[in-house]
View 1 (spheres, protein in one colour):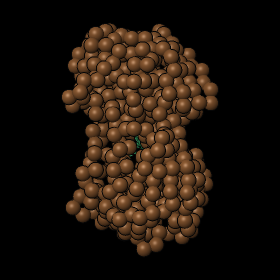
View 2 (tube, helix red, strand yellow):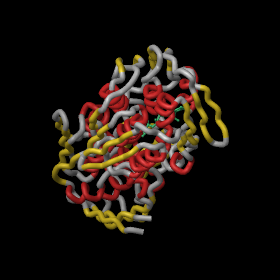
View 3 (cartoon, protein in one colour):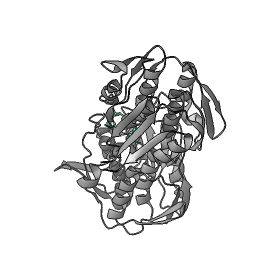
View 4 (cartoon, protein in one colour):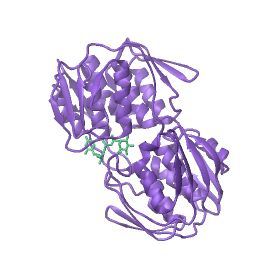
Length: 416
Ligand code: UD1
C-alpha cells in the first residue's frame, strides 16, 4: 500500500487548477446508460472512483474511448443489467446505475452497497421512491432486483434531501409517461450539474436549483458534449491547506458560489478571500476558531468537515464542529490527536482547543476526506509525517502530490 511522506512545515505559493468534480461526474457517468447516442465528456478526473464507475459501465456493455481531453461513451448496445458486488462494494456511488438501468432497460440488479467507514448509509429513499414511480423491487441475496413495466410520472417527497436519491430519481424519471416532481430535493450544485447534463441530452427538467425539481418525460436523447463543474470540495481543501500554512494561493476552475458557506466561514475565522467568476484567492494569518454545523447545501458541507477540523487545530481559540449528516465521521480525530491535536469528541460534536504545535508521527487514512485532513495537518507540522493507506486519497484528489509540490509543498509517495 502506498504511503505519503510530507515534510513540514511549508509555505504554499502560486496558483492551482481544480479538477472537475468527482461527485458531479459519478452520476453523469451513470446517466450515460440512459442514451443510445454518443456522449463526449470533457476532463473527467483520473480518480479511482471514476475508474470504478467506468469499469461498471464497461461491464454493462458501454464502449469507452478516450481521446485527449474527451472521453466518448457509446451505450447503444447494453448487454447486462447487473452491477455486481465486486464493484459496488468498492464504491457506494455504484447505486447510481439503478435509476438509469430501470429507465432504459426496465430492469436492474444492483448489489446492495452496505455500510461504509462514515456510517451505515441506507438507500431506503432511493428504493421507496422508485416504487412510487412504478418499479417493483425485491431485496434478494444482497442484491436489489428491480423491474418496471412503465415508469409513471408522480409527485415524490423526499423525507430527507438525499443527494444520491435526488440524482437517482431524476435519472429514473427522464422517460416517464407524464410529469414527475421531486419535492424536498437536495440542492447540491452537483445535482444542478446532472440536470443540466440531462437537459443537454434532451431531457426536460425544470426547477433546477430549487427544492422542487420537475421532470417531464421525453422519448429519446441525442448526441452531446459536456464538461462538469469544478470540484468544490477539492477547492475547499486547498483553501484550508493554504490557511493552515499561513500561505497565499489562488485556486482556479471552480465557481466560488458553490462554496459560499465555506468561504464565509473562513472569512469569519480571519481569512482574506477575493473571488472572480471562477477563481478564489486566499491568504490569512492569525486566524481564530469557529463554531460550525454541517448541513445539506447551502450549509457547510460534511465533505469539508474533516479538513476544517485540521485547520481548527492550528488556529487560536476553541472551535466546535458538529457533524449532522453522517453518524461516524470523526475518524480523522484520533489520527489528528496522534499528531498532538487537542480534540474532544462529545456526541455529534468535536471540541477543538486550537493553537497546539503538532509533531510529526505516522498516521493512517480512514476515508477520503479524513485523509485530506491529515494532509492539511502534515503540511503545517514540523518534521516528516508519514501518511499510510493513501488509496483513500486517490479515490478523490486528482494529482494531489503534483499540485501540492507545484505550490511548494515537500511531499513524496512511497510505493508499497
Ligand atoms: C453524497 C456525496 C457525498 C456527500 C453526501 C452528503 C456523492 C457520490 N457522494 O453522498 O460525498 O458526503 O452526498 O453531502 O455525491 N440517507 C438515508 N437514506 C437514503 C439516502 C441517504 O437515510 O436512502 C441518509 C444517509 O445515511 C446520510 C444522509 O442521508 O446520513 C445524506 O446522504 P446522501 O445525501 O444520500 O449522501 P450520498 O448521496 O450518499
